[in-house]
Amino acid sequence: MFVVIAIIIGVASLIGGYIAIHHEDLSVAIIASGLVSLFASILFLLLAAPDVAMTEAAIGSGLTTLIFFYVLNKIRQRND
Amino acid sequence: MEYIAISTGFALMLLGLWGILSQKNLIKIVLGFTIFDTGINIVMVSIGYVRGKAAPILDVINPSEAVNEIVDPIPQALVLTAIVIGLGVSALMLVYVLKLHREKNSLDINSFKDLKW
Amino acid sequence: MIKKLIIIGIMAGVVLIFFDLFNAFTGNEVLSKTADYYARNGAKEVGASNLVTSIVVTYRGFDTLGEVTILFLTAAIISFVLKIREEDIIPNRQVRITSEILDSAAQVIVPVIFMVGIYIFVNGHLTPGGGFPGGAVIASGVLLMIMANPKFGISHTVISWVESISGVAFVILGVLGILFAGGFLDNRVLGLGDFGKLFSAGIIPIIYSFIGLKVGAELSNILGTISHAQNEKN
Image (cartoon, rainbow over all chains, first blue to last red; front, top):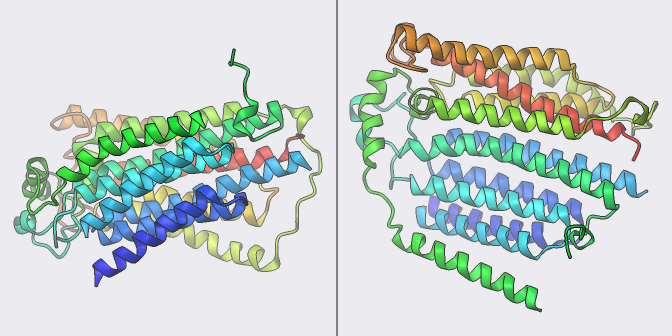
């Protein structure tokens, strides 16, 4: 059962990573990279590492994504 | 389980490296770095995984039988700090991106040719 | 074209390096020698239920000190690079008005988020979590405050005091270990107490609380600096 979940999550995170690198819209790419971090945190939980899963969920998908958006917002503001 | 995890980790690393090397946009390069980071963390945690064992927290597990019940805690301790450092490093890179964009008004890496001769 | 070839060459090299590592990986049936030692003696020597905590704070405590220093340095460099001169600040920047829901919810939820963060790092030696996730949760609370009110500025006095007091306290507690116990960052300065209780494992809960406060202050500082940079002219 866990193996099936792990396969689904692994494939989903690879798709997320592909979108993050190749999508033209930067907002979509940043959201996709946050998604990769979220899937990685589930994978950490399946690998019996709850501490790492908590940290990754809070930092990888929360704070990093928002910092990217702040920078993107500033750059768009300059281009206007 | 650990094979799936380690394959995912290596694949994410390669994906991130491909992004770092092939993309032209500076923000995309930083995104490549964060994906690379996530991949390395997954690889490290899955190297410490022991088949069918529980997390290294001894609340239900009796401490005298812990040796046969838990996974390896050392890679987890390393990854715990590595994730926090990763946030600091990507924030630093993004701040430099902000500064570079102010100099040239462009995010394309090909417009930074000042050191080229 | 040549660029593509070089990229493919580098990728092939990396694949070659990691293929060996991947091929040699067979999965573990038993713990490695170091982990075996920690599993056998961790509960006896350190007294913390969470073995990851006892490694992060005690066995590898010196690494953690260095790690917190790196985080402090990145926060300092970010503040330095993004420093804005007074005349460059847009006086009354028009920000989009935040929605009523976000505004009201933030007032209710932010204290709860802070409480959860403090719970996570105070109980770091008993449950999953500890200083790093706790600090990150506190920083997410600060982030919610900034998002609900974009004009909200983080007080640098508070941040720098929290940050420096916890940093100094971390080192002083480590030195107390040299004076009263086995070595730097030894946790047996206080008694080990009952295994599995909140007041146990020597000074681990105190050290981890300081680490949590320090990490929370540093991450909040990074977020505050980057959000303040939005006010700069160009």
